[in-house]
Amino acid sequence: MDTILITGANRGLGLEFVRQYAADDWRVLACCRQVSAELDALEKSLSTVAVYPLDVVDHDMIDRLSRGLAEDAIDVLLNNAGTMGSSSFAEHGIDAQRFGELDYDDWAQIMRVNVFAPVRMAEAFLPQVLAGTQKKIVTLTSMVGSMNLNTQGGLYAYRSSKAAVNSVMRSMAIDLADRGVLAIAIHPGWARTAMGGDSAPVDPVDAVRGVRRVISNLTPDDLGKVIGYDGEELPY
Ligand SMILES: NC(=O)c1ccc[n+]([C@@H]2O[C@H](COP(=O)([O-])OP(=O)(O)OC[C@H]3O[C@@H](n4cnc5c(N)ncnc54)[C@H](OP(=O)(O)O)[C@@H]3O)[C@@H](O)[C@H]2O)c1
Image 1 (cartoon, rainbow, N blue to C red):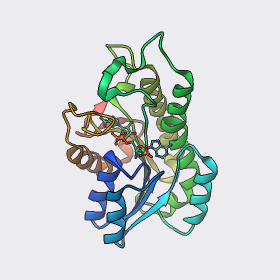
Image 2 (image 1 turned 120 degrees about the vertical axis):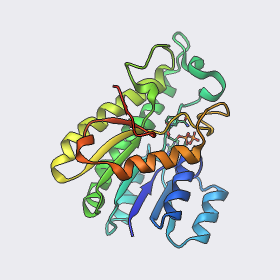
Image 3 (image 1 turned 90 degrees about the horizontal axis):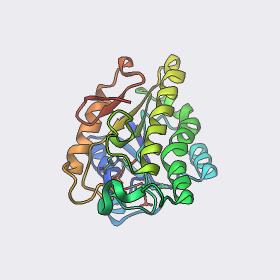
Image 4 (image 1 turned 180 degrees about the horizontal axis):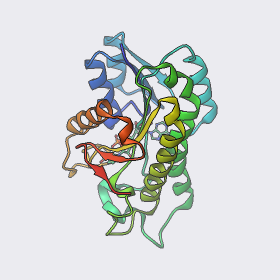
C-alpha cells in the first residue's frame, strides 16, 4: 500500500486529495491545523486515514511529527497547505494585494506558509521519502507565480511566494535527483475552493484528479519543470 502525507488536509483541495487517495487504497497521513467535520468523518470511517495536527509554519511541530513518523515510509510528500494571507483573491482577484496598499507582515506569513514550509517539510521528511518506493516531493504552486504569464501585475505577495516556491522546488529537484527523489511544483488549476472562489472554472474534484495523474506519471525527465493539472508544462 502506497503512503501519502498531505498538509492542509482539512478543507479545499487538501481534503479532496485525502478523499481521492483514500478511495484509491492509499494510506493517507492527513495533516492540518484544525480537523474539519469532513476529515474527521473520513478518519473514523477508514482505517487507512490518520489525522495529525500540524501548523506548517511551526518548525518544531514539523520536527516532532517527523520523529513520530520516523518508522514510516512516505511515497509522496504533498505540500498542499497554502495561503493568500488576509487578502481574498476570491473577492478581489489580482486587486487583492495592490501596490501602495501592501501589508508586509501578511506578506511575511504568506512566505512562511507557501515557501519556507514546503522546504522545511522536505528537509524533515526526507528519510521517510527515501524509505518510500516512489520518492516524490510535490508542492502545489500557481500559474500566477509564472513570470512569463504575468501580464496583469498586482497580487504581489501571493505571486512572489509561488514564484519563489517554483525556484526552491527546482533547486530541490536538482539537489535530490541523485538520491532518486522526484521533487516538483504542480499548478492545480484555478479551482473552486475558499481560495479560488465560486467563479473559478475548475471543479476541485477535477483539479485533484489532474494533479494525481501528473504525480503518478512523473519521470526523471520532469526534473525542474512546473506542470499544470492538465499535464502541460508551465513557463517560469
Ligand atoms: N484554488 C485554486 O484556484 C488554487 C490555484 C493555484 C494554486 N492553489 C494552491 O493549492 C493549494 C490548496 O489551495 P486551496 O484552494 O485548497 O486553498 P484553501 O481552500 O484556502 O485551503 C488552504 C489550506 O491550507 C491550509 N493552511 C494554511 N495555512 C496553514 C498553516 N500555517 N499550517 C497548516 N495548514 C495551513 C488551510 O488550513 P486552515 O483551515 O487551518 O486555514 C487549508 O487547509 C494551496 O497551496 C494554493 O496556493 C490553489
